[in-house]
Image (cartoon, rainbow, N blue to C red):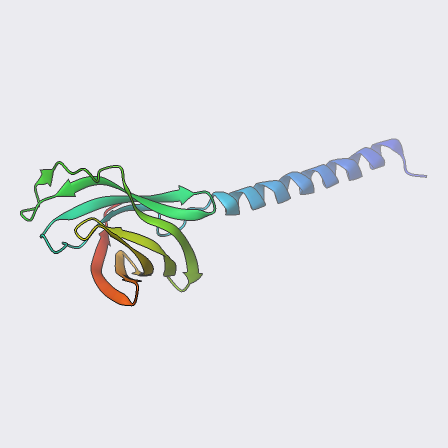
Amino acid sequence: MLRPYLREEIDMKRFALAVAAVCLSAGAALAADPLEGYWRTAKDDNGNSGMIHVAPCGAQLCGTLVKAYDANGKEMKSPNIGRKIISETVPKGGGAYTGKVYSPDRGKTYKSKLQMSGKSLKVSGCVLGICRDGGAWVKVK
């Protein structure tokens, strides 16, 4: 028969292990994906670019246009502010992602391939067999 204080010590150890396991699993779940943050897009066909904020949207990642810039790099008004530019995006490993990307200059949504390398993001996409190179985006923060 276990002495009462020994039984309490075993119960406390089990409790401490359970709390540690919960904290570790929560920490892993709360770790930000490297794609999260603010990205400056490459210039489009019109010479315009944008600032995209990438954040989780459910189990996927989405990127919303938060600022638009004209060909001279000056901030400008755009009807696309607040629009999801990246959607349904999931990591594939090795800095690769797939999902969808909307191109404001062409008004089309492409099936996207994103490849991240450090603070650079190579963006490309295809729709109905027509593919487009979206250039390299640069991570701002």
